[in-house]
Image 1: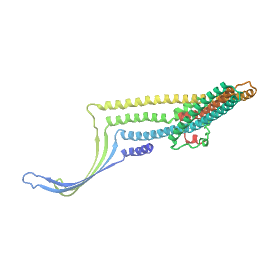
Image 2: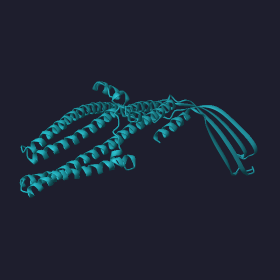
Image 3: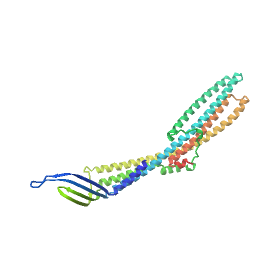
Image 4: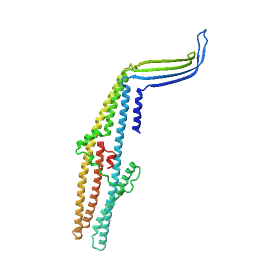
Length: 386
């Protein structure tokens, strides 16, 4: 709606160069008291005035207004693109976090069920006099910890669904129906310097800030034109009168003229106005420079977050593989009596937790990738529809 409004305003600004028609129609009683010796006049006067005014020259003020309106339209379009990119990132993050939370809850439930099963088996052994009570108690401690992890995972899933609902205005439905999207890796540049270069040229937020500076420059031009230069108008005035000014009957008047106007405040406040707009332009330039620095910082941070997420995912995946190998040997040694139940439970818990962390790290990569694309100004529907 802002973009549509800006387009209409840009069209309306062109009206400054079109002629303006003013129509005034009056009617009423007119009484004139004449000097002594002359009859007074009482007439029902009627008059219709048509005035066409065409701006011929105003020192560039109208042209500056037209350019300002066009820049405002471009700025609205840039803000729209920036807002859409931010919303797409928010939507993707909400979608991915539901998958993350659902996977985390699944792993937590598996861990809880496994520890519960092992605890019941060990308790049965104790009942037969073949197990250790301390092992059962330690297993119950781990079981309580697994329950707490499951409760936290359930809460995390509820929060993730709330975030999803906040974006899509509907529930995500069964989590197992959400598919992990294919990431647009071809849009990620090879180096951080390339990413920064793209961000500086494409980021819509930065584009909008740059246009703010251009609009401020046009304000300086418009102020200089309106404060230090006259306006010249061509005017045609066509009047139809009947019984007006104590003159009975119909009459018609036509005026064509060129009018020069130059209002100037004798307190020389025009100088202050011009200085004010000039300083506003300076401030806009400073804000643009600050926004440029912020975008570069955000892009570099997003790049590092993506690298960190990738390395972290590799390490967590390796940790899960090692935990799986340890569990295989721990179970064999448990059957031979070389390992305690706690060793096996610890191995199983480590495997499930590391697998959960590795799955979460994959989501971190996805979110970090989209965050980088958002900073570079490359996040759009096409990037998310792969």
